[in-house]
Length: 92
Image (cartoon, rainbow, N blue to C red; front, side):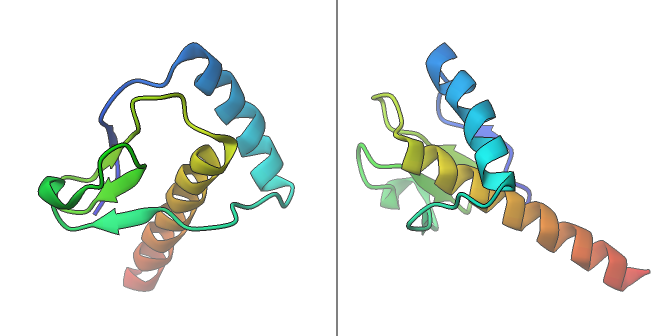
């Protein structure tokens, strides 16, 4: 499943930090944890970042995300892109 939705838009500050954190990730800075994954929106913990499998949506907290949370999203997206590319290569 392709993750392509967000429960809210990134703030301008989060957008700037995401760009810097993506570069840091590419240079070896990784999150301490992994993003919480739930099956359905009803299972999403309130006020906590998670990925909802049924909808392919990142449920972002209302408050500005921490660097750790942004890194968890980047890590998840990176792993998803790698898995999709590996699957496509295997099909060829």
